[in-house]
Length: 310
Image (cartoon, rainbow, N blue to C red):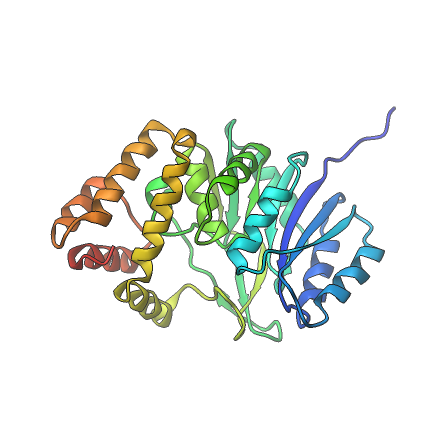
């Protein structure tokens, strides 16, 4: 019998001064139960030992290859966008990776099996995470999201961290094309918006797929609890969320041809919420059908609509 060929998975890894935890992250990818993995790295101008660690791993990588390219040096979102536009569309699936987490051994295999079972068309997988401190000591779990995963939800939050996400080829093609047209606030939030907006499937796995390290250098960290809620509220009141909404609306409008009629209608209504004067935005929000995953988040969303902060 001819040998069985396993399709390769691409891991898109964005790095910047990650020497402290990068070795452990790469080791956890190397010990994945899935056998064929290429890592495509965009380093955003590291001045520590990050590139040296990457080159050492490139020499001993046995699952495929590691390629290292220079990033645009415009922040982490643009670094991930540069990966999306430079990665070939020839893989069986695509993962995002941060530089400081620890992947659980079956992460890739589990995500692939769930994507394979999805309906035809673009599909995105994301999961819950186990939170750990700098030393890897467990400190909790990310929030458990139980409401439907949809474009109406994606407009106001991501369903999961990008470090948990895997995309099938159709979803990756959407992201790659969109990344040529527009920038985005964060790659994970944009992936969720675009895939669901195109009528694709968003799969949320309640089983954690990795250890998500919480430390002072995190750009995006723990997203639950009272402190996180007050942090989000502060961002809403300061106009940060409104700026994000404006950027997302503009980016989605450049990709209107990728969106389903239902998503286009929802986007139009969400734009009305964004442009409405208080308290008209509250009624417009109800008509748009936009929602967050938990009660506390929805209370904050409706308060923001009432005050004109969206």
